[in-house]
Length: 215
Image (cartoon, rainbow, N blue to C red):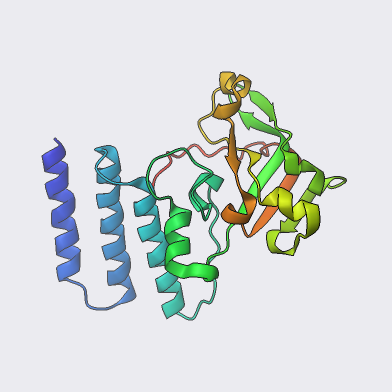
């Protein structure tokens, strides 16, 4: 079965590549064929997920730049976009590491964190995390912090390891009782250019993403 899928995706990619006439439609078709091949690699565990994510991000950025776009805004889990690769326990280079290596300072990563975070898991389940940097956002419901602008003792705090919320979908209710299953330790000055902190967060009704997580 695996060999037949590989032959099919390889044949499709070869066909669309051979018929590439330089048009935007041809470029879209070629990228779509690549994504199918990436899905095959993920299904049969033969490709690095974050490396595939980076390939797709680079294509989007380069395609946008060619059409005159100066910036690309990416929304993703902390564990993927962290510049230093600390916000995920998965092996190998992360998307954020690859992006920072490729684009340098042009790649800005904004981390998200919260104190009480509710997630959908057999109903609504809340995890509460009191990271040492929580005090930087005292008095705010939603706070934003440029890491490079912080000075004094607060800057020393951001240069040390702090605990942040890290949950994704799917999330089981029992994971809320085991800290390392819903938190991660990072050094903010290495991982992020800025931080968004929400004191009390929960998904909006009807916003649950039912689709599988794909590259």
